[in-house]
Image 1 (cartoon, rainbow, N blue to C red):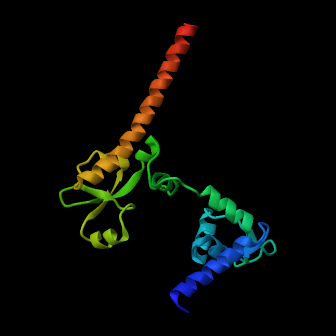
Image 2: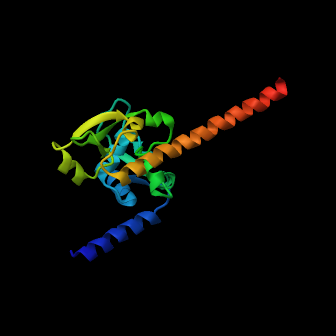
Image 3: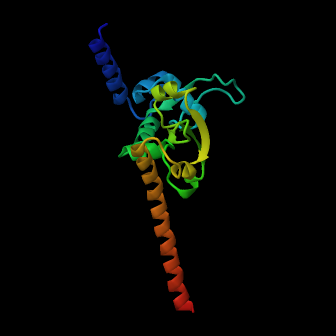
Length: 191
């Protein structure tokens, strides 16, 4: 079967799954097709607790290899709950972006060159970069804020990283200033 015929066949199966009632229970394979995912991705999400709700058949105390089913309504709800409107929102959802001062104190892995300059976060590096840099550059674990306060080898990457940090700090500074003003108002009323 040619590639275009395979794609048409997949779209046909997908359309048929979408026509089913929301109460239908789908196998893991059918759910993977419905979500345009893979069986192994669904299995991984089940283990981590990050995927859609599922039904596990079998008696209490049965083995771990009991068959799992996904109600179509749960798959649709999970899809809706995972919608994002920007790459920023997607990064936050995946835990790849800092959103609070507490996040900035977390220790993360950073690539460091031979002059102690930061090259970037290991977690944000492409697989090609990781393969190319392993054994060449050191990996050092630093609090995020400390990495931002070091010299970097790439100005654009440093600016981008620092902007995320300063954006968080400016929001928290505004929150603190607003709280101080509220205290001043309360003090002048009570005082």
